[in-house]
Length: 157
Length: 96
Image (cartoon, rainbow over all chains, first blue to last red; front, side, top):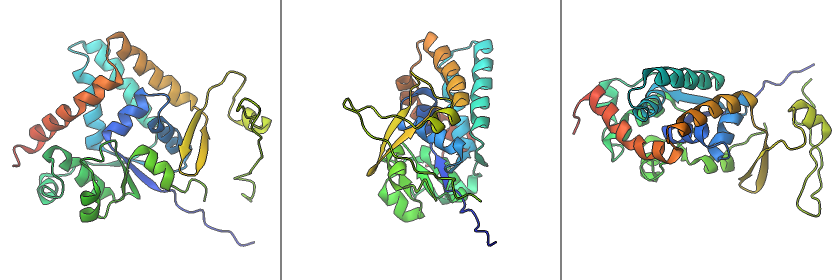
């Protein structure tokens, strides 16, 4: 009997706002994306810079309570493991310099460089003002917001 | 054979907009009376997404812990650009 190969799941790169929203907003589209990613509807791609940015953001809001911070980070790490993401290492300085002029805001360059390296099917961001059509055109990345991903993704192969 | 992998079942909308989820899915997703689901408009379709218990319990712990300290999603999202700038400056220096 002939067997048909299962199509590869789409790879979806999540920006920090989507990850934060997915964690902290139980009734959001971003939460639906985390659930769908974990269920295998697509593969979540997680950049180290995104992971670290969200981690630092959590730490920035807990003052200097080390016990709390340690617990919170352990829970955050557990959540990320549940998502079984494909990890993308941080870009080096040369990559950041190379893509410096592709996006207006300097602070977004490492995330953009990570996405370019990962070459995902989709980059999902809550900040389509910075990660705009011009950036998409220059990089070839397909950029959408969380609701946009659900509109374009073929969830059933 | 994976022919039944994406089994389609029909549901009808009741007088008050309610739908009856097929019992097979209720069992498979461990849903019961009172369970909540995400209803997501996705283009021309509507997705019903059952919460993932592992994600729920882990994220609920974070939400509760941060809420006790008065930290909300809004605050975290507002703080994100600042953290992003700091991280870039620390790691890559001044690239202007």
